[in-house]
Length: 207
Image 1 (cartoon, rainbow, N blue to C red):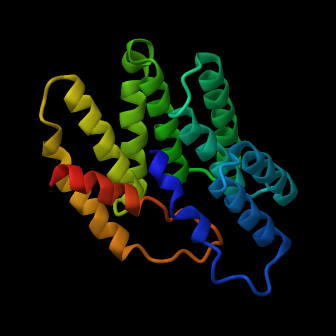
Image 2 (cartoon, helix red, strand yellow):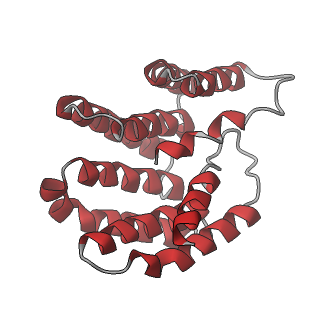
């Protein structure tokens, strides 16, 4: 999951001219993230979210940074702190956008981070929730490549844990890549469109 940052920073490359304050702020936040200043990026996303009032997207990316950063941390207290903050940001995002597949995917990733952090504690309590979140996201948007990709990755991890063949989910990775190729550009600025590089990385493992 640490690879999903790669494409995010290019989202505003063609909107340099006539940018709004919101667009400039978001572009700066992505730049900070790219330059390995995740906490500064989170703080800026939060400030943007509070200024925007009813916009779920800045909260979404603030949560994502906390989640992805947690995978590279070993200190338990910091992991738990980041994941709790991510949940708070997701809760804020939900207040402005209900039944949103992208937010559900991010919440599933959050719970996956908990399981990765402490499998014996969180695996039994969160596995069913993760599955339900992905299923709901896919019901809302059956062609969402991020839902397909990360649900498949979750199933691969579970299969490996239980001694089953994770490669049986490789067709889902292929499907995700197909939908990434077909994914239309959303008219909403900074709407999530990341994930294709992660799909390609997993595809190589399948091959």
